[in-house]
Image (cartoon, rainbow, N blue to C red; front, side, top):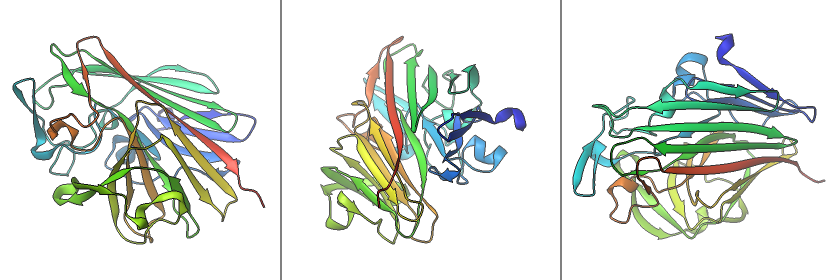
Amino acid sequence: MAGDVLLLENDEGLTVEVSPLGGAILSARWRGIPVLAPTPAPGLASQALGAEACFPLVPFGNRIEDNGFHFDGRGYMLTPNTADPLVLHGDGWLERWSLLHQDRHSLALGYSQEADAATPFAYETLQTITIDGANVILSLTVTSRAAQTLPYGLGFHPYFPRTPGTRLFARAERYWTERENHLPGAVKPVPEELDFTSGTPLPPGWLNNAFDGWDGKMRVEWPESGLALSLDADESLRFFVLYSPSADADFFCFEPMSHRPNAHRQPEGGGLVQLAPGEALRGTVTLRVHELGP
């Protein structure tokens, strides 16, 4: 599998390993210290290589209730793509991408999906990963190749290290409770224990909630390593999902998305973008490593 691990590195000490399997990042380290957390997941890279640290969400993120939706007067059905009963995270993370370009500091991966019995979505997607100093820039574009207009979304699913001292900074206006099958439930004001505006530790128990009214900025601090990481998302990514199974887990996920989970089943579209054939949606996030002061 050596050919399935692509290395980006620079003289400042940032190294990122990427695989065409699932278009996944396998690791990201700053001067040897992990700033993404390789974690077993249902994605293709995990099945072949052992763990993923980040993977692309395309042409949607999270789950779709009952594996189907109605759009423009027509019903569409999808087939579950993992052991989960609901179709999960689209196609890209479960397929091999083509390497389109690579140099020491950047690479580009492409994947094409045809509509079939499992999905109505037909599209081409391009992912670029670039390192620059202490920055990792991730960009994802989906271009519709379907015969009809359909609602598309995209996002990123990074895993971050969770240590006892981890603190999270993020501001949102609303959150969704979680109901059966890990679907969003009721929308509510952000409760105090999930208000990360001023920085707070993650709650100790199960956490799997969607947030919106996000300003596109996040920061996580790890006092144990003396490092912090900031995430800046462009205006197309104004939702996030925060997932942490427990305080005993050594990771948590902060997933920037262009739409809410289960948005296909929400009358207003929940942030999905209607793409006619040939139209495209793009999202970019920048991860920046910082050293904590004394």
